[in-house]
Amino acid sequence: MPTLHKNITASADIHNPKWFPDANNGDVAWRNEKGELESTDELVLPAALNFVDASVAPPTTNDGDIYVLSSGGSVHVDWGAVSLDDWVRYDGSAWNSITPQKSSLCYDKTTDALFSYDGTDWAQVGVDSIYTASGTVPTSVVATLTDTLTFSGGSGTEFNIYSTLRADDIFTVLTNGGGSWKAKNGNIDIGDGSTYSNYYTRFSETGIKSYGAGSVVHEINNVTGKVYFMNGYMSGQDFIIGSNSVIGSEEISLQGRTLVQGAGTAGTNIAFEVYDSDTTPATKFEIRSNGDIYTNGTQGLSNTYTFGGGSTGDIASMTFTNGILTAVTTVP
Image (tube, rainbow, N blue to C red; front, side, top):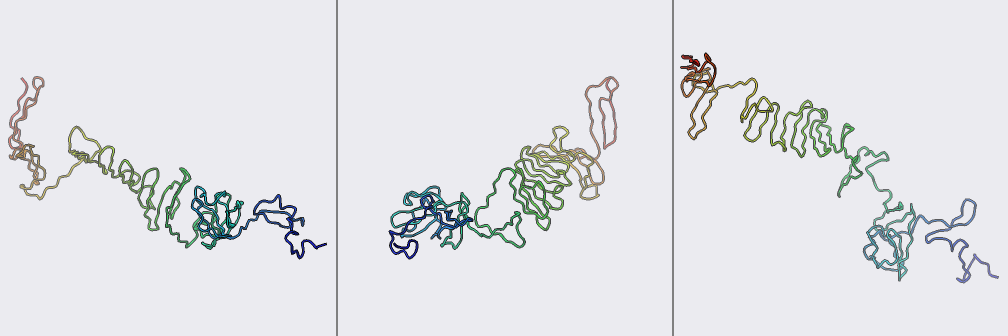
């Protein structure tokens, strides 16, 4: 009688263990904690030539070639009846597969890297990361981006580069020199990091605003078409100083105390002039630097001013000659 399980020379004498028919492809035998023989998932799969795109035909078809179908939206027909993410080996006529388990490992010979399966995707093990477990970039780490950087996660997603954390930041860059800029809710703000909430410039779809001490100092408004400054604005042909509104229908409005300085102190230096609006303008009113007033080229007020309406005894007209009142008429 031959001694089985020892020095077996005839393949017909070899039989499978009792647990083998119930095991899955990829299972291995092990001695459990009770000293009994049982099968368990093989978490370390034989090394693959490469991790490849399943939607592309097999790179090679040599007997014993192993690949992992780690990417692709579909499986190319030449792979046969296998699935995405499968570990596959060619037997000379067909590809046979093992479906990885969560935490399965496989070495990629092409990239010289170990990969782990998380139940959904294969990922390289031991890749250098710019993040620690807490999500903080370690000291002296330099991260170089050579591809698209995408942030997702809903309305709370943030990207911050800062020297001082701000609770409401969405996209913020604060430099050590104090300069800063921030994009939030459709706005881009640029300012000084140390006094950011008080002094900054905001770019938005409605225009540009500059803030000083928390208030708008200057503004270009795309909606109103106006350019506002500290105490006034420009809009089309309107130029208003001293207020943010006109008094009537004027195009130029100086409101408040106004100082006009002439070119000199001589009586010939004109500090302020009013012209008529025809094609050959002439000076109608002028104030010279020495204080003299001219109307129609004549020094002083020289004209008769008539007032309409009124009751008996009211002033009907007043006549000035060289700035001196020379006559008054009343209503009969």
